[in-house]
Length: 230
Image 1 (tube, rainbow, N blue to C red):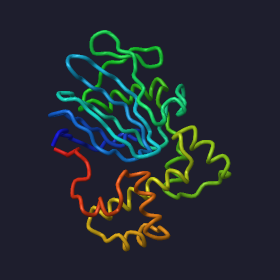
Image 2: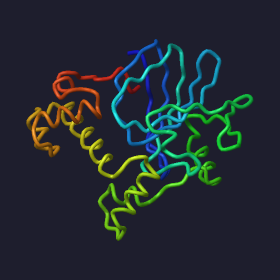
Image 3: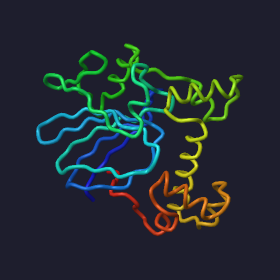
Image 4: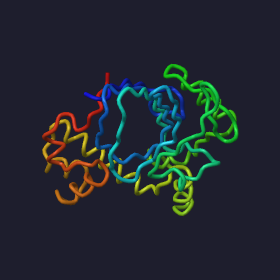
């Protein structure tokens, strides 16, 4: 175990989860594609590294160095920063400028480094200053709730608020649901049927692209990543 992680849910309408971790030793792990983006704060060797991370359109590899302390804020689908296009965020890590002391720069302002316990207060301030906003169309569509918007309008608003089309998000979510079934011990053929894939090759292609593992690898591996939850 090279990365110890503690995770909690949030009552904020903007936050999916909050995580903090410590790198016991240097390591890496396959990370899945990710619909959501993160603000990540790393302390390593006496230095502070504030980052905007993702979202990720395909699976890839995450790396970390020994001794780092990491705070992740994962935002809900539809939460975005109007001053930054997802063209600048998709499939990359963007380093924010460091300020003096425990601060960093975001949209021409300095912000204090948040802590695991006060992330909601930090995010509320970003919302108050309209640095963070949420497009309600995204959760409405993803939860299959009724709406009267034209498909073209939905696609445009999804692209602006998530960086993806609704279909891309649905494909990623379905692959992750299939991976969860396999991790629970469901057979490959039963997973194909339950997740709505055409056949086993279709499932395999989807999992390789969005999860980073084949069905057989997931089925026969109890811990497919090096990340553990404390």
